Length: 223
Image (spheres, rainbow, N blue to C red):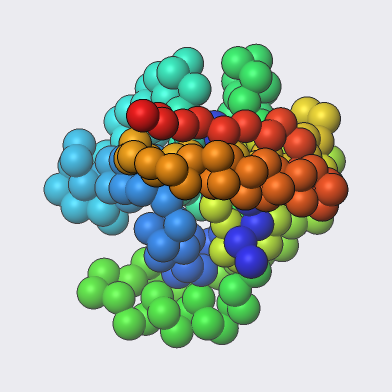
């Protein structure tokens, strides 16, 4: 089962190059929700590896993240995530606008990162990757105390309305909210069966309430 995060959320990916961050983000989030430093380097430079475009790319990244936070949109920050000051600024800004922020740690073995990197068309130097891997170990030890609403390892996630988050399912600064149970009924003519159907729906709602669901509601378009 996917770990469910409340919508909107700010999700910060943390891991060295070739640890699987971008692949994971694409599998779990819409493309417009992902703000990638590599993609932005390509947009303001010559390619994703264009380090000379790094400053401009990160300036643009910060602008996009700020705009999405102000609009209360779920946002995934796809960078190395190894810069302490940047992580802290993202946490503080998200909390200022009332949005929870989660870190996703990618604990891919260093040897695997090096193997994947070597298979790339333009691999980064081994010395640079090994420094990232070493830095990642330090960040892993410190990140739990940085103020994230939750620190998760790489795993399936889904961002859902807060009413669908079970209490204790994820660590957040907001009080847990129980399950919501709802029925949305299409518009059609039940004829003489209407009363019988209504009794049946009432029984369903009663069973849902007995099972611990709350905020029960029915949206109908009866004729």
